[in-house]
Each structure stands twice: as C-alpha cells, then as structure tokens.
Amino acid sequence: STMSPAAAGPSHEAAEQLLQRCKGLDLARWTAASGESEQEMAHRFLRARKGNVEAAFGMLSNDVTWRVDNEIDKLAQKPVSEIAGVDEETLWNYFPAWHQGFDKQGRPVLYSAYGNCEVDTLCAKGSSVEKLLMYHVFQQEQCVGLLASQSELLNRRIETFFFVVDAKGWGLRLWTRKAMAFIKGMADIDGAHYPERLGQMYVINCPRALVWTYRVITSWVDPVTSQKIQLLGGPSEWQHLLTQHVDASQLCSVYGGNAPPPFD
Image (cartoon, rainbow, N blue to C red; front, top):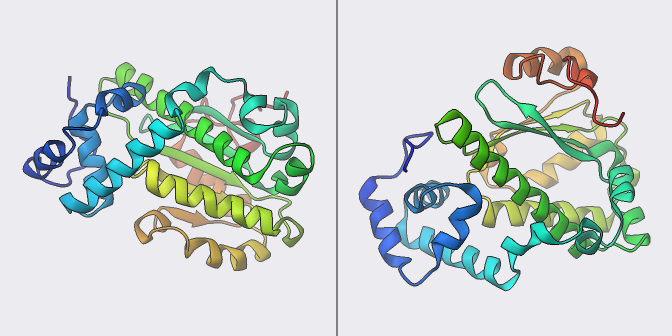
C-alpha cells in the first residue's frame, strides 16, 4: 500500500514517466528493504534531481547497477568482520556508531562518536578505506530497514534519519589522507545511493579545527544536504536542540536524556 509521501515534491506524472523509463530495472528487489512503493522510490530520486526525469533515471539506473554488482541485499547476511576486515570490538573502539531510539517525528536517531574515528588505526589492523566504505553501506542498509519497520509501526512513511555526530576529542591528527578518502567516499555513496535520506544532522562538541575542515567536507556534499547539517559547540549550544527533537526516554543519557548509554 502506498502511504502518503512525507513531503510534497515532484508531480505524480513525473513519477509515472520515471517508472516507465525504469521498466527494465528490477526495482521490486530494491524496494523490499525500505518497504517503500516503487512510486515512493521514484519520488525520492526525483526530489534529489529537482524533478528532472532524465537525471533521476540516470541516478536510479546507476544505483540499481551498483546494488546488483555489489549484491547489496546480501550484505546483511555477512559477518561484520568479513565486510570491515576487523572484528566488531575493534570497530567499536575506532569507529563507534549506533542507533538508539526515535525522534518525535518517528525518525531513527543515529549516533557517531566522530572524535574517536581512527581510520588509519583500522587500516593498520586489517581494514581498508574500501572495506570501511562497505561497512558504511552495511550500516546504511540496516538504517533503511529501520525506516521500513517504523513506517509499518506508525502507518505513515518514515523516509529520513536524524543523525547526531559527536566530534568531542576530534583533532587534526585524525585528518589524514585515508580519513579524507573515507569521508569523501561516504559523502559520494550517500549522495548517489541514499538520496533524500538525511532529515537532520547535528555535529555537536565541535572543536575549532573541525569548523575549518568542514569547509572542505561541504564542498563534497550537495547544497540541499549541507543545509540539513548544523555545527554546534558545547552542550549549551546543542542540549536544548536535542531535547526539542528527541523525547528524554529515547535520548541517550550521555546527551541529556534517560536512555542508557550504549557502551555499558
């Protein structure tokens, strides 16, 4: 059943035209994970391409080709250590990221402790930028699965994530060539294969050095996405914003809520 789209966007006609162009693509295989209808998928790609049917078709056919070539729908069955090249404990120590609760709009809340993200250490321990990017895809696919279960639970389409990036402890020592390649790779993957998925991102506890490097990062992200990203300093800048969006029962105690921290 098609739920009403979360946001008004391209016309029904444009979506129909796009789906006509996609006749040869097995879209059903790829809508299965997100629970969205082909119509909703078409709308999402059209929004990412400002309603241009040809551009949206190019984007969607590239996405399907990438998914088929990389067997993205089989990723969930693989052990994390096979995808990332390091075990889960090592990942947790040097690339901590987790899902916890939902915001007041029903969107999954995702966290990343970016100040602890040590790409070079992970690579030295058996991972690589390519493997870490595939692990990022694995995480994104899990989040898309959350969107499907939330949409079913609430009986309305939940299409986007709410993302909290904690930059506490981040320093220029982490801004290495590999780290840059990893962040640029994530931006490219998210732009090409997860269009219109970011609802809001707060980068909290931002040190000054990050504000400078962020100018580099925004050049890799499309303007619509970068408008959804806010850089904030210490708790006085972000705590009230988080509690505005996320109920205390859903918010991690580390960030001012009542939910247990994930690292206990």
